[in-house]
Image 1 (spheres, rainbow, N blue to C red):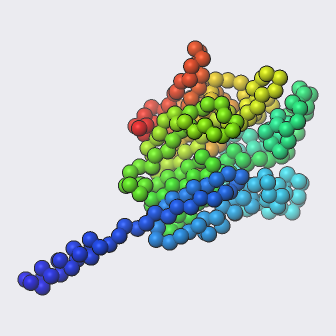
Image 2 (tube, rainbow, N blue to C red):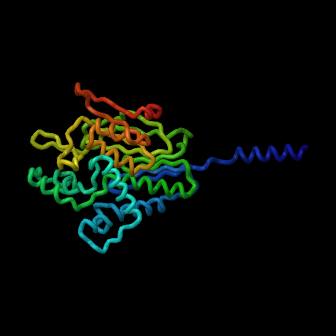
Image 3 (cartoon, helix red, strand yellow):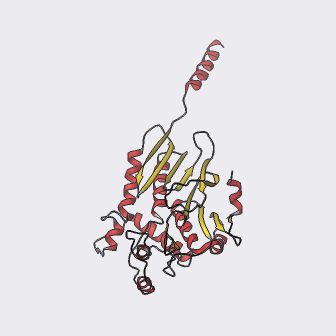
Length: 311
């Protein structure tokens, strides 16, 4: 009997001394923005994480002259499209078809013409816009690559048996399990206040989510004024002109971040009514839309299922 008691006390002491597995945290630059990654594991995986991100960069970066997309855009006929490239290319086509062309990876020349790419010169003429609309042979994956980068890192963490993590790249997020306080992950949605300096970070709401991905697109941080008129960075691929409607910000929650990223961009083109129409066909998606109502006041529409996630 004494031996049993001794064994029980030993087990209790060992259990009391055991420490929970630590959470690792990494931040760095990638894709021209900042990433923040948190995960519960007993090893530092930053080198492996960044190696995976560099694979994405090597395929889709518009700033890397040797990336697959850059070489294709130059007309390099020797380029072999990888499985990764084909995966995202097919997703882009699927979302484009589903949103009546609101999502279009060939919009890059129009984005540049309106001053939101590498150049910022005078505004394009109607003739120039018409010409660019007819010549759509340049691909740009910037509206989906950050989300896909989050997915790639999430896959790596899952392959290590890691269940509790948050991957965030430039505001696009994938979360799983719980945070270090054993709570759902709290992800903020910024209030869409005109701020080209990126200094304003007031939150509109905070969502408590897990096992989902989230992406936000908006016009409130990337715009400029010329001759007294505001030009937003979202270009409607169907018209060739910057969008002009009441939607200020679109946040989408989906099973993966590339999908959330693409639909968030699409919704900024489609506007509130167009976004709602797409959402009716996709019950697996949830959205949080911030717009200006008829009285000029900021208003919110969110998917009914999303109300359970708001704090």
